[in-house]
Length: 239
Image (cartoon, rainbow, N blue to C red):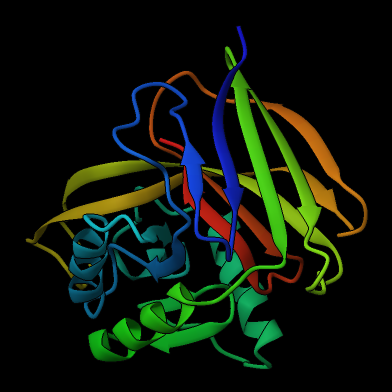
């Protein structure tokens, strides 16, 4: 039996949604906030805590991507993945920057916040929350299959090549850090990304219609983003 899970028309007043499994309440489009962090970074814990606070909101999709370039200083981050380091470096190239930092936050795929700057982040989230996106989206599940349909809105331009990604993450994980800059600390991390997989690309013309297998359980998000990585056109939590 095929069950609709999302019919999203960004920029319109209505959002109709039903769950992939046991999602409580309607799903809503969210502002994507990516934190690039490391267990071996002494400046990161305040930003890690901020992600945990943002995770309680339904208008923000905060995701923690742990990088591996601090592993050499005495503590290998148990969540680190070279893929996330590469993604952060790609953002730096798009911003014409020669350096990457931790903590660093990217909002909506465009704006960067280096260090712990909660007021600047709050202003950016408020700004992105009111922006329109140039695509309409429908998605539905049939068992463990996700079907996604996208179409451009007639009155807005769609940028170049668009990536469609499924993101798996762990809502909460506590780590006892024994060595490195945070030696002796016990830190609880929120929304730790465990997999970021591409399920399709789209040139923005006509309609996109793709199907992908999804895991049966665990938190899951969908990110639709201009290639680069660039502007995030849509982000929301499926469950």
